[in-house]
Length: 66
Image 1: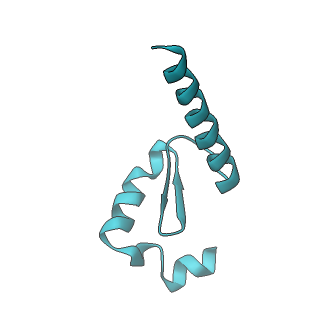
Image 2: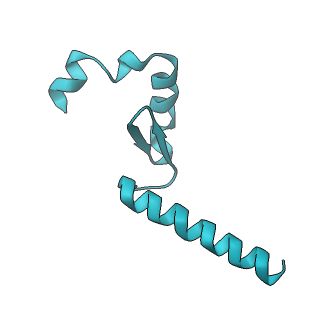
């Protein structure tokens, strides 16, 4: 990798890290879908359920416990 590619890669990493911090990333992996944050490997099944049916998160019971 030449110096220009290395510099561009470092800049992209810094920009992505800054965005993650601004969004409140707390774990890895982190996914942002429709304004919702899913973080950690253990949230992937919940993320899949949300993608299939957003009502698993957007319902009265989840609002109550929030």
